[in-house]
Length: 371
Ligand code: ACO
Image (cartoon, rainbow, N blue to C red; front, side):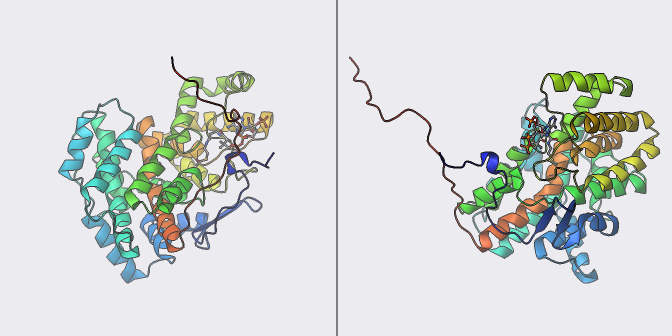
């Protein structure tokens, strides 16, 4: 029997210069920079530039980048109509996936996969996803679209379009930090999906649409939504330990815990937990922190399994006012930067991704003749 690596665990399938995940040192670098330093010192716009171009922008490059992004922020009427055609109860991830696919179908240059064309398409999706996600959030509450403001940075405008006002700077910063932390993580399932699609020489929109489908699952990006469902199911912190014992006895996977690569904690969690702490203080919700700490402590004590990024992000987005089902679309708005950087890297030295499988079905047999 061939040595099969289920889930490709531990298999190195290609090189990448975009990010480095190091589980031994619990670190994550984007193009060489520690992600916690980028979160502290840079805006998400600078991080997007870094992922696509390989370097942080200088002042002039940043001004040009921001101008191009701000010019494309509005939600096109036709995209809005497509969303409006779909059921209000449809999952927001399905709406976002459909909107991106629609934008791709409308772009008659979709097949142009030159680096310049793909960079332009990446920037378009980066600029338009906040409008799409914010509109989906508002439509769930029968609220009208809010027009973008081009005097605001990416995160302040995202929150403005979602809630009709710009919250305190601490909230904007916490949101911006989450965008930076979610942006890129090497060959995770959705990024690998984007690279597989790209490897067939399909277009960037198809790669992103497929990646959104992969991100939706609760073992991947869907976990930030699932964490909040767990908090709701538990109710109050005093019930967390008993709930966990029952869930583990039933062999349930506890959402927001564990990671394929990090086995001693996710490098991004301390930064996002610090952002969550500021939100808990801002909104005066110590109960949420108590739930967070109690469940994490109990999980560590029972299984030695630590939280991943989705664990602090879920309650952080809840405090900001997003509906639970909208959490994973927020992840999309961020990760589109990493996905598209990988699309361009894949094309720069492409080989069709086509692994092998070991056949374990019936031996060859004859098709019976019909009477
Ligand atoms: N809850 C309970 N047990 C867990 C968890 C968890 N969250 N994570 C791992 N384990 C246990 C498994 O049951 C298994 O135990 P066993 O050896 O006794 O059977 C062992 O730890 C190894 O787990 P695997 O699932 O084999 O590890 P894998 O590397 O395949 O899984 C994964 C990683 C999918 C993320 C897993 O930890 C999980 O399901 N977590 C919950 C979902 C989640 O939070 N996903 C977000 C990922 S991070 C991100 O997308 C930003």
